[in-house]
Length: 94
Image (cartoon, rainbow, N blue to C red):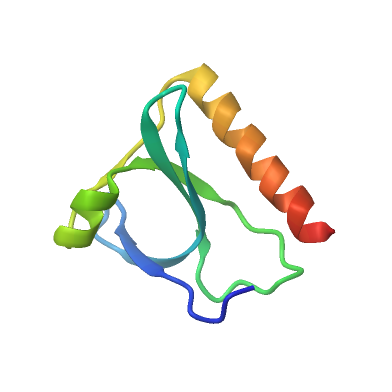
């Protein structure tokens, strides 16, 4: 895996900051959107972690220090993202 991971800081509803590393990004032609998959920074390779997925605008993310990530609210869209994640994880195991 690439040693120079992108780090993103997310702020929760309480104003607490948490660091996340970018696992991967992809664009869906079907939905016409880009997506980003994140996991907690500093997690061990064998450690089970909760991954987060968002819709993101690569242009806005490069320019702004805030925003650019939108929650995924559509069930069909979630299923598509999970499929991409599972495929990515399967490829990493081989």
